[in-house]
Amino acid sequence: MQKIFLLLCILAVYPNNLKSWFLTASALPHNFCPHSRLAYRQGQLAPDKNSGEPPCQIPNFSSCLGINGVSQKMPRQNPQIALEYLMEGNRRFTADLSTHPNRAVERRQETAGLQEPFAVILGCADSRVSPEIIFDQGIGDLFVVRVAGNVMGPITLDSIEYAALYLHSTLIMVLGHENCGAVSAVLQGNTKDIENVANLIQPAIEESKHQKGDRLENAIRDNVKNVVKDLSKTPVLSKLIAEKKIKIVGGYYNFHSGEVELL
Image (cartoon, one colour):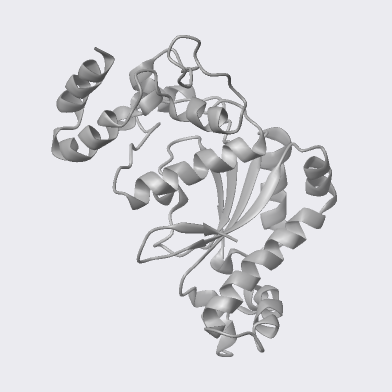
């Protein structure tokens, strides 16, 4: 009955994307919850005694699915659960099955006085790499810091540490992307007017000199890895890592597939 109810809801609120929603709904167990499924995979939740399926922790079933931007809450989980939740959103995006959660009026009201983003994204300022879109998240889900070349400077670090300390985000992702213009400019020596950014990218350029494969792609990936290392060494974040309160990872976004590859 719940599948039938879900399908009727989809017909009412999402008629233009019925095929995608139907395929999604047909694959869901009766008490499916995306948050609980991730926790279930990690052994954080025991299966339902009657059905043997992951129990849904969120009372409002349709809200949990985030249909048509309806609010869905990301429970406070360990950093690995947060990472899987983020990557699950990217898989929806690449499959053209985005749910566009947390974008309705209810979410705006919920977050008017408080934000609790589960992840921080340090990404490039490139207009083609919008974290909320490629990870299929909504208002208040991600604390996004964007700068050309996804580099880490003093102001960037202050913003990231603020989210980690006071907003209690449990995941930080440094997100690079295919054909990054900032890295390409430094590689070609065209650093006029971007000297501050270029200085931070230069170590990756040097590291890529003798690597096999495409040098630009290697430099982009090395730049991400360098920023991850630098963040992990800061006093504030290294302490949180040691306490297992936060995880820092690198990602590489492919323009053609839409996939984010973990580095």
